Length: 423
Image 1 (tube, rainbow, N blue to C red):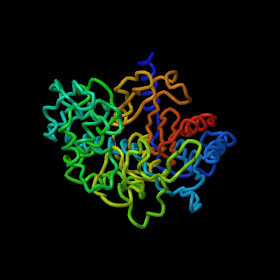
Image 2 (cartoon, rainbow, N blue to C red):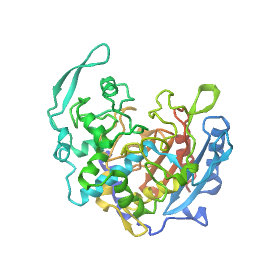
Image 3 (cartoon, rainbow, N blue to C red):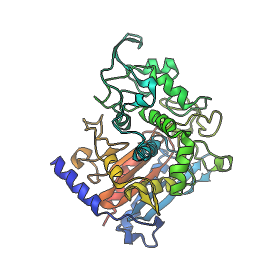
Image 4 (cartoon, rainbow, N blue to C red):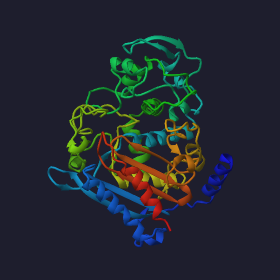
């Protein structure tokens, strides 16, 4: 049945039209939504704000290349009562990963490497890796064994490299922290090259290609882009993706003129409601709550470092929905997008998603247990941002708020509200 579903999705993709425009619709009902039902999104987001779980949000939905829904809610900063605007900028965290994955595919399409090449072919420090085999009672790695396989580029794209994150509780957590490995966003004056050399000196969680573990694999992909292209990652993104797609508000570190558009980062504190993040909350994953404003500004995290607007990111998503092209700019070929949205890692309960080259992929609606479509692909960000691309419905959606840690389920509710509004 799964193979049959995949065939259906591919046939749908083959019949999709690449739209030349990405504009707001004069008549949202012409995009295939029931307007009354689409308006339910407002009530759900406003209820989440009223409950004190989120300060505000921006939400955007587009279908058939036309924006059907684009609104802002609540506050960008609660203390000053600054209203949220549609052009406010958000730390998109792991939504950066999709952009880095596209950057890798751009270079792949130029024949500069193959996806099944070993990473060590381009970054020699990743040859002769070792795998953790024992950890002592204090969390120190006490024994390792030689890896029998090399990390491939495709392993990095699918988080099957054996590389983890410092903030995850794994057998490598103490080793990472002691070595000075960061989670991706920092005010420290360090570089991607230096961090990836430190990472290469750490053992792996498992044999490359054998399992799934979310981690710094995409930061290493960012460094691969720098090595192969000969450009800093911020310059590569700007020249190859942002300028091409008209993404004028996407940066690793904001220009001063746009500081006032950055949304304040909050933390949810049980029944006490939201407080401005101090950067020391549980599982915050950054040392500067004002990031990307402040000191440092030298580390370009391919896995977590970008800030953007809902509109900018929607243009990026529309390019993928259009099979690699937007408004006359072709970023990727249709075949590369097809490969990226094909699941390579199979799900295993709630812990491991069906995962393609940069995205979670829905291959079975029954497993997801929520409204959606087979063939949709998506991911989210640590600070309560989310997106998905649905080829069968010709639909993209973006939700952005700014809270961590958070118990809010607004992202799932937003998904439900979008799908229940379809005709």
